Amino acid sequence: MTRGRGTSAGRAGPLTDPAGVAALLRYDADRGLTGVDTSSTPGFAGRKTDGLLAQDADAGLIRRAQERLHAHSLRPDGARRALILVLQGRDASGKGGVVRHLSGSVGPHGLETTAFGVPTQEEAAHHFLWRVQRRVPPWGRIAVFDRSHYEDILAVRMHGLAPRSVWEPRYGMIREFEDGLTANGIDVVKVMLTVSQGEQAERLRERITVPEKAWKHSASDLADRLRWHEYAEAFEDVLLRTDDDSAPWYVVPSNRKWYARWAVGRLLLHHLDSMGLEFPAPAFDPAAAEEELDATTALITRP
Picture: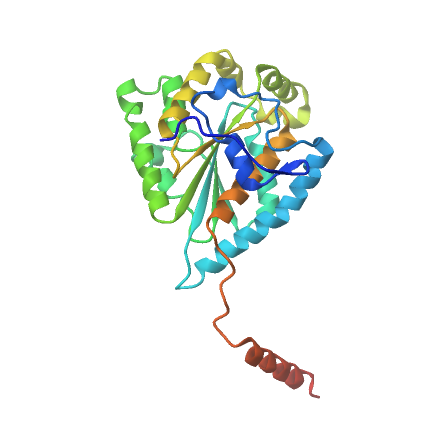
C-alpha cells in the first residue's frame, strides 16, 4: 500500500502528460481526501474552453488506445489485457457525465458500463462480489463501474444495513479480488470524484428546480448530505485501506465538470499507455494480399 506519493510532473503548454496527471491525482494519505481543493485543476493550466478542446483531442487518443487493446485480444499470441475503471463519489459529483464523455470517446463496442445500485434479490442471495465478477470485461474491452463493489462497504456502513462484523472484512476481500484481477492482466483504475458542499448544493438544486433534471432527485440525496462529515470519514477509510500500486486510487477535483472529464480521460490514457501495447504485426504478407485485392477488383469490374 502506498503513502504520500510525489506530485512532480512535466508540462507541455497548458497540459500535463497522462503520466504526470496520474502522479498529481494519486491519492495521498498525508493530504487525505478533505485536503484536496475541489475547484483546482491539477495538470491543466487552461480555461474551460481549452479544456473542452483538450477533451476532444484526447478522445481520438483514447479510441486508438482501446483499438490496440482490442487488436491484441484477437491474437492467440497477443498480450491479452482488459481494464476496469471504478467511479465513486458523493451524490451529484459528476459520475454520469464522466461515463457519457468516455462512451463518446471509446464508442459502444469498446466500453461496457454498469451502474451498481441496490442488489437485486438474486444478487443479494450470493456473495457480495458475485455480481461484480459477472461484469468483469472480456479481453480487449474497458468496463466502467458507476459506483461499484465499494458500495458494499459504503452503503452498508452508512445506512446500517449490516453490522460492522459484516462490512469490515470486505476491505480485505476487495483487495484480494482486485489483486487477482491485476495478476491476470485486468487493470483496475479507481477514481474518487470530490466536490465541495456549495457545488453539490447547486447541482442538487438544479435537480429540484429544473424539470428536465427532476427525475434525478431523490430524498435520500438530501438525507445523505446531512451526514457530509460521516461520509467523508467513510470515503477516507476506503481510500486508505484499499489503495495499492496495482489497483490505485485517484482523487479528482470535480467542481469543474469539464476538468473532471478531461482528467479521468487522461488517467485512462495513462493506464492504457502503460500496458505498452502496439498494433500487432500482420500475420500475412501485405504485398501478396494487396495483389489479391487488385485481382478481386479486376474480377468484379469485368463485364
